[in-house]
Length: 413
Length: 149
Image 1 (cartoon, rainbow over the protein chains, first blue to last red):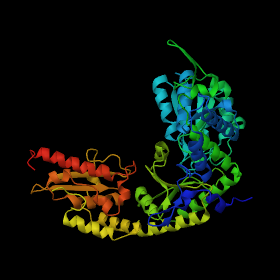
Image 2 (image 1 turned 180 degrees about the horizontal axis):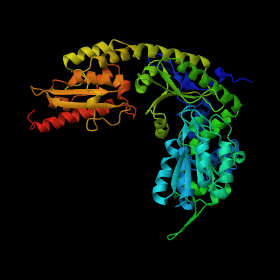
Image 3 (image 1 turned 30 degrees about the horizontal axis):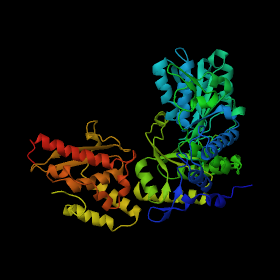
Image 4 (image 1 turned 120 degrees about the vertical axis):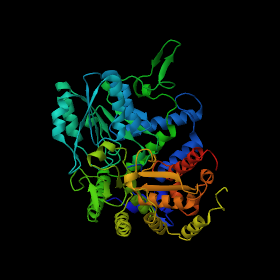
């Protein structure tokens, strides 16, 4: 059954907004963050109005209700991602999740002689923590380059170095190009050939992948999966790191304090078992509950249809932009690897000017380096314009966007 | 003379009224592009690290000096036309004034022109960085001139 976009949009109050002198808002910056349905907003408001208390500690009514809602959200979110609750650590988002893998696992288990294999397609959040760790631990970082003609990973280069890797970190779907990578193959090769055949661990950055696909942690088999809630209709400030049990047993806390301990003495402390060991301090309670509500809302849809809808809009828009004089569209949108993200650049109209001129027409899109400077350098550019679609975007919005883009280029380029 | 809301140099007041009469944001941007094309531009050959303004998403540079009569004179260059237009209006606002008046010049004229989006304090926006640089350059020029202004 096709998505009922009108009914979906009715759940998003912000999509009724007028901007830029009364023009309807056309929100096409979903790869940065998605809008929130009324169900998420109301759930968080209800929590603060009725149940707000700290969790895990007190025995009063509100504390019990808050703990039940918070831990209930953990169950619902873990279940949605095909994981057990004991394999999910709440974080502030994908960035903190990757940092937890770097400082909680890699710092204690990797050192000189170990190779961490990244790709040129990675977000800065999946590059900089490894660079910092390399400075401290002497690990070697290598990169799988990209094919700039179609925006895919150079899998020949991957094949050439995977045998030496101890850890492979790869983005599920690029936030710049929209390319979805061959994750299953990468995981299989890392496990089968990595570390000279002994097997490398794998971290998948699913910040962009999780909003468009059902991520099944158990079926994927990666040791680490990092996810953000706010790119899939949840609130900002909440995400998770999914970690398999054997790997979690090898991790040490990189943040410490309250809530993660069993006992604290003046000379030493003992820690909780499982995810709580890595969740120091008062957690993001309302945010976790809000993310749970977002997943409950999303669960009414077939994610295959959600992806097909976004990809269809992306493919059509990329094709139209390619037809505008002076425009270059980066990445390949006709192949199966495409998604709802389209990055483009005009040869004379500056990306910032273009973004402002589109904003003046009511169109919200991103401009800049998208926290992926190495990837943009591979294309020989320092910034692009980017539109990214989600399930509430319509074909009419895409058509209006392209029409306004044509007018802007004709008038200002 | 303290320049701010309700008290602008005449030439700037005219420009403010010209912009404020336009309600369509696209038209305002057309006007900014027009200003950019008329600007006394610091050409890209003159750009260097010393005159670069950090914090701008576009490449932006300014040079400031005193003219023959001791008045402030800035020239700016940017690869984005909207930034170039904002620089042109800034030149209109401050050039020819005593540097001491530039130091205290309010950037509120941009808001009065309906270009408030350019004042958003985000990393993608450099107008305030640029204007702050203009004011600090004016302060530097006062110092170089023995503080006689």
